Image 1 (cartoon, rainbow, N blue to C red):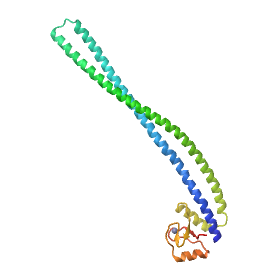
Image 2 (tube, rainbow, N blue to C red; image 1 turned 120 degrees about the vertical axis):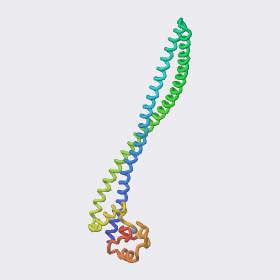
Image 3 (cartoon, rainbow, N blue to C red; image 1 turned 90 degrees about the vertical axis):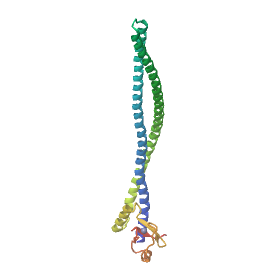
Image 4 (cartoon, rainbow, N blue to C red; image 1 turned 135 degrees about the vertical axis):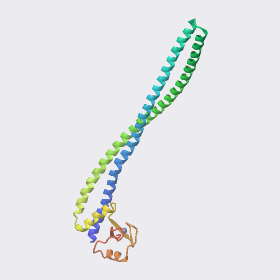
Length: 236
Ligand SMILES: [Zn+2]
């Protein structure tokens, strides 16, 4: 039985590494996705800003067109009123429309200026974001390469360790004990064995009854912790 426990302990040591590598195997793609997600969110924001900018520029164009039309109309009225022999009532009407046009032009110019300022601020935001995205894309490419390399190394190590594992599985541990070990490995997150330190199981940190300790020191059978079911062994 000491021989069995010794093989199991070797196996557990290997399995601890295998489980750690498996966790790495899950972490690496998750890390890649997290970074990609943050980059995608910024790219999405850039698309939104571009749409806002197009809208802003269309608005500025509209205001400019309206101003041009008002100016043309004003010039026409100025010309007509200067050269017209129309009566006072007509001239007063011209005068009224021209004042209105001048006020409209002035209002439009002010509004146009405000919108141009807004568009400039938005363009600045866009340029800043684009620069940030460019930087992040470069970073991501480096990270992606490193992650891919790491994934390859992890896969290679796992392959070797699993081969070693298969070899050790054939070293003469009774099949029922191996089954018990494998079940515990899955159920207890990769830790099937626990040292009994004094009377305390180092897997669950609960004291075991005396008879468990006695059975374990006799060394004739596999003894499990009554609380966490892990296979117990004594310190060397
Ligand atoms: Zn325990």
